[in-house]
Length: 369
Ligand SMILES: Cc1cc2nc3c(=O)[nH]c(=O)nc-3n(C[C@H](O)[C@H](O)[C@H](O)COP(=O)(O)OP(=O)(O)OC[C@H]3O[C@@H](n4cnc5c(N)ncnc54)[C@H](O)[C@@H]3O)c2cc1C
Image (tube, rainbow, N blue to C red; front, side):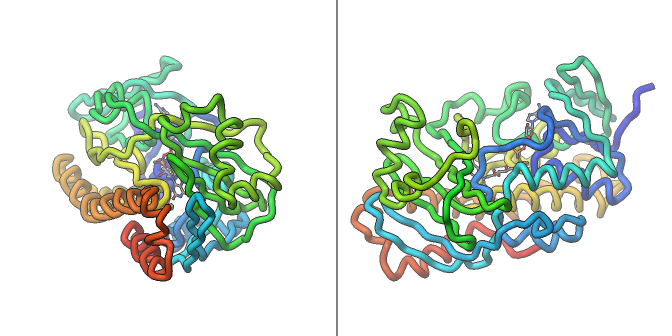
């Protein structure tokens, strides 16, 4: 007879790994599926809000053991190089996903089962779920947690509406050797997007940018784009003059959707980006992924014997309470920061923005948890 797990978690990014840790520490039998091997790099700005620290520490994870960098300043520049700098309301830290996800993976594998598998089908069978992997293996679990990120083959299998629509965004990330302040995250605007720069644990500088397909399509490739468009911002020009790439070539992802999704689909509990992705310049997607894993784990721990419809209702309402207004504020922040007219006239890159920026950022962040 096949082993039946309490929870099958599909996706081993920050959301899935955190939920696996929390649930298994509370006595549940957990299996986590991740299609890639660890460690691996991911397209991400790699600035993470301090709000996660108390919770991560309660799970036995201290990012500063891995030399994460304290970051407490934000700088925003327009394409002409005009700067505004402010203190980050809560601050955060810089650590690569290569390091952080692997750190969590090492902890999870001591207490839960991890399978390197791509799940392609999840069927609800009234009292349990059946999961089918590309390897042809089948697994069974009482509950399934969807932690498969912003875009997955499973979104197609589940016929989720956002996956039917094309989106105008693409993102590029690479690490560099360069001199850069330890405590700063810089957001440099250029036509069609912005690039974030900040340090990670090994002193490398993460450069991650989001750009519209429309603008990127004018250039031959990433090098051409960086040379001719990114360098128009004098701060990026200065950075690229000195920076030595660490990766053979940058990582890219496309079709990034910021559409609102549902936190429960076909009785699958969604966490992290599978439940919705906040605009990356808020620097809060990772904290939201971790927090949603906490909220869901607590729903199950607090009421082990509740019927599934009650669990779904409780999770949906807690998720909406925690994240709805943050997602709205994130969309607004994106509009303000990406508005070329505002940036060109420098209307908000003045003294009042020293207050406005921390205010807008605080609206997209939660309190330490
Ligand atoms: C350009 C950009 C920059 C960003 N910068 C920041 C930042 O600086 N700070 C911040 O806080 N947030 C940032 N974010 C957001 C952040 O990266 C995400 O919110 C976070 O990674 C969400 O974690 P997750 O666990 O939900 O998803 P992921 O980390 O994407 O993990 C999902 C996992 O599921 C696996 N998977 C998918 N399908 C399957 C399947 N069928 N079977 C098995 N495994 C599967 C994938 O391989 C993946 O490992 C950024 C996002 C973008 C796009």
